[in-house]
Image 1 (cartoon, rainbow, N blue to C red):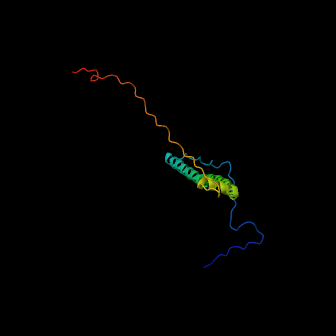
Image 2: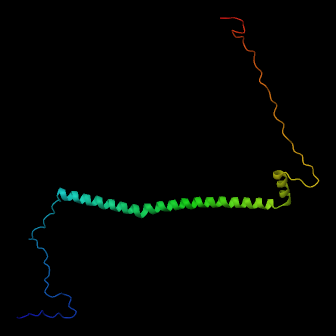
Length: 155
């Protein structure tokens, strides 16, 4: 029933209470035992663990670098194709706008009316040139050699 109180430490004291100092090895102490080589089973496990960790690291690198790079390249190709398509659409739009401006002139409307619809101005006489049929030629027959009946011989 006698609890023994620990002695109070002074403030500012750096040494913890009840600790002994470590002894330095003397020259008479035994040398530390050398490490034994790991057994073959342990080495095999370590090799397997190392290979597994390296494989996981490789797969991790593939997910981190290869997949995003592949996605980036695909997106770059899609953007390039879309830009080419957009450039083609701009060229087509410019061509159609030019054609539209040309068709709004009176000369273009008259030309289309004459060429496509055969229209004429009042007082004009339309002429239609009808193509002639190509001449029919009969093939010339070469002289046929006399046959046995034509020669008059009977069997």
